[in-house]
Length: 105
Ligand SMILES: Nc1ncnc2c1ncn2[C@@H]1O[C@H](COP(=O)(O)OP(=O)(O)O)[C@@H](O)[C@H]1O
Ligand SMILES: [Mg+2]
Image (cartoon, rainbow, N blue to C red; front, side, top):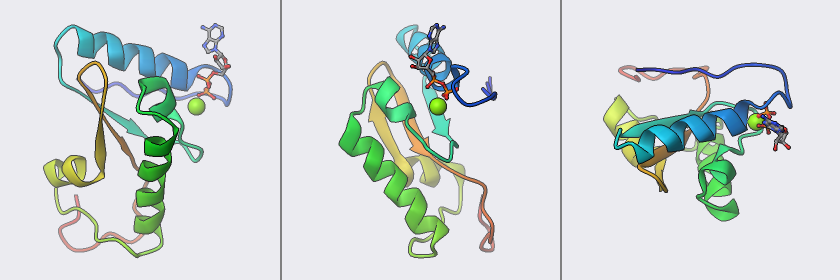
């Protein structure tokens, strides 16, 4: 199941996303949460803390600036760019890829 949460700023996207992710995770489903926001702070609501939220964003910035190799597939993306959050949730901060490399997922 894939769930996308969109809407205006301040409408509750981050809060709703975190509650849905953590609720499904607590029920035993493995959850991958992808934060695509230009100002990503889902990590705070998911409980990974300020420093880890900042670290995940810095990895996305490195990718955007061409200083980091793209992951060639989904599993490697989640491994390399993800972080374990409480309640069975794995979080990655991602964005649209402007210049995909050959084989980039
Ligand atoms: N159902 C709700 N009822 C009241 N306040 C809420 C609700 N959902 C979110 N908020 C509050 O509204 C503000 C914006 O929520 P947030 O999830 O950060 O929005 P977004 O990610 O869409 O910008 C936060 O202060 C949050 O605590
Ligand atoms: Mg938000």
